[in-house]
Image 1 (cartoon, rainbow, N blue to C red):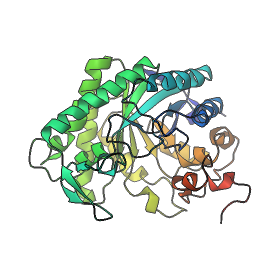
Image 2 (image 1 turned 90 degrees about the vertical axis):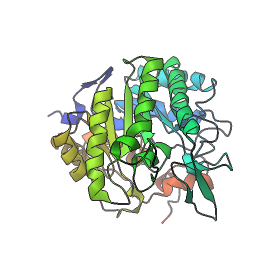
Image 3 (image 1 turned 90 degrees about the horizontal axis):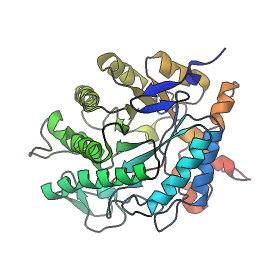
Image 4 (image 1 turned 60 degrees about the vertical axis):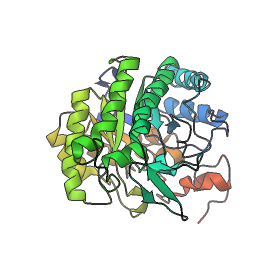
Length: 353
């Protein structure tokens, strides 16, 4: 019997052959000058050939001074268009859709000493970030839109705005970080203003038919009960603005127990009941049963991150009854630094304990 995850879906301007998304994860396979590496192209091709319906790239940086990793794709440079064109062609040939994730690291940037955040705050290692000026905030929507134009020129099927995981846009949304008292702070409407301006700027440059997705935290390290109401408001605004799909992630996935599953499903269920907007969930999906549980809860798609780092063929194996071999150890965030090209402890000839 065919699993519901194999059913096709039509989002706004984006038709996918099944309900599976390769969630954006940094590959560590790019070059130091901000280009995709040969490993990136091989990775995207393998994911597509192994049945993943929608592939979202690792976070591509939209502006100088906003890179979180030296191997990120520099989407503030026209040279990136050639890489997107090649990667999109490889995935399209295998029947997958290809979406580019757009991001700015904010105070987590590695390529500037002038660190700026939504609000001024102390950082680790005796560093500090100043509050962004309104002029700098205004420039962000232009940077995201210009990057989206490059993705569109390269043949991408859409873009995803990274508004999760404590990168810059998510910090505007989250009252834990956002202490502004101007129009970009205060209430949920003010905190959403930057994301709305980015969406509208992309639509103006790329057309309203060009799909825009958003990745957003479903929780916060701060007052989480109050944030639930904020999240509902954010999703309602995304729907009003014509966002094709919102992918729900979370702020705390790295610290969750290795045995945890479907981290944010309960919050996602509440959002599904409250807002009629296509949703996907990422976090703790380790089996076909997990995937089907997400869809049974009413969500439209299900996203996979670390399981596809460990094994690009996980989805096809899951359909055959296998569970993910992913250990949820999170060493995929640090291992490539120690052993370039190796993305999972299970890829090594002598797996690390």
